[in-house]
Amino acid sequence: MNNLDIKNFSIHDLMKKIEQYKKNYQNLKFHHHIKTLKNPMEIRFLRRNIAKLKTEYNKRN
Image 1 (tube, rainbow, N blue to C red):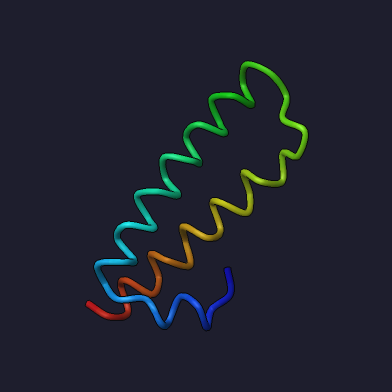
Image 2 (tube, rainbow, N blue to C red):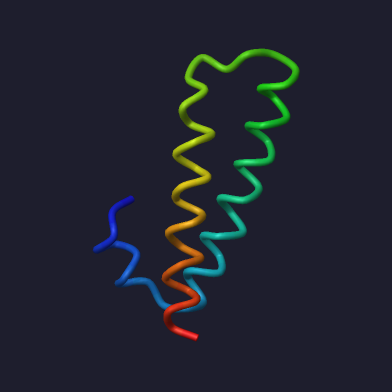
């Protein structure tokens, strides 16, 4: 997800994406503790995408 996509989202869409990514992030962390993931970099990418979305949300409020 790039910054141009994020800027085109409405505030409602930003909140939905944040919640969706948070759930995915928690699931990946949980599964990583049980069994090592094939690509552990996914955790980092999700965390950064959540931060980007939250930053855009805070800019608009």
